[in-house]
Amino acid sequence: MMHKIKIKFKNGLNFDTFKKEVFDVNGVSDSFEFELSDNPDFIVFGPYGNDIPPKGNYTRIGYFCENITPDLSICEWAFGIPREEEVNHKNYKRIQWHGFNPQLLVKNLSDNDIDEIVTQKQKFCNFLYSNTVPYREDFFKQLSKYKKVDAPGKSMNNMPSIDSIYSGDVWERKRSFLSKYKFTIAFENYAYPGYQTEKLYDSMRVNSLPIYCGDNYINETFNTDSFLNTPDFLKIRQSSFLDLIQKKSQLNFVDIRPSFFKNPIN
Image 1 (cartoon, rainbow, N blue to C red):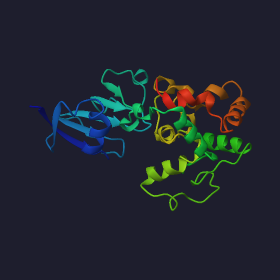
Image 2: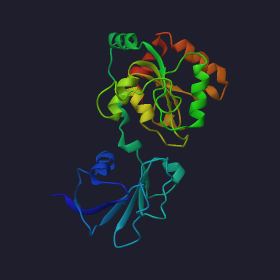
Image 3: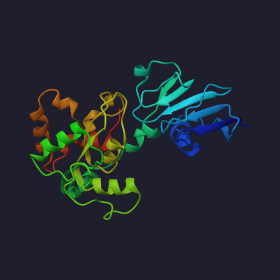
Image 4: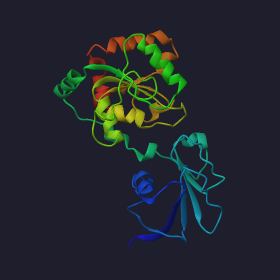
């Protein structure tokens, strides 16, 4: 019989989300039974507001699942995005963004499968963003000097919205759009250690090669030969990266096939 734990959720968080993103991926769901209660043993709070529980006769757990530095002064335990070395606290554990499992990106594809995927990629590169992020838009402008980059979002818009073209929820529509392209500009809103989001994952899921910039420790999770990691090129000389884009945009993915299609994680 599993031990029962009384639990409460606050500040924009609910049980189903936390269970999926933290308990399930860490094996906790298999060891305990949870009961929602107003007299809890644990209070779990998210980063979406100011409803932070005060100290009390319970244990507070902060879930810092966005680009937020965990504050262990307002909780006894914390989960979050930053690297454990950055937070440097024994009661903190890093999780992958919203509990995503990178193993889901590993594909067992034959050379024929890969040939078919490459043949289907008739469009060059996309830029699908709503928020204005200067360094991301600067890269878009520079790459656009070489070849048109399709931008259906509010940021750098140069084509109609995809919302009426593809079906499904917002994430399904996004991935359907990305799937047509050889490349996806996958720049995070912030370059912060440990902060990786769906911007990288979604393009990899649909075999659109990510042009990534964000987490400077991305190599600890992913094989950086499986995508174009801009700091690996731009820190040397900016033009070399555009030269690489030009080389790899000619329907010739032979150089990256083994890592991109078969071994995206470390």
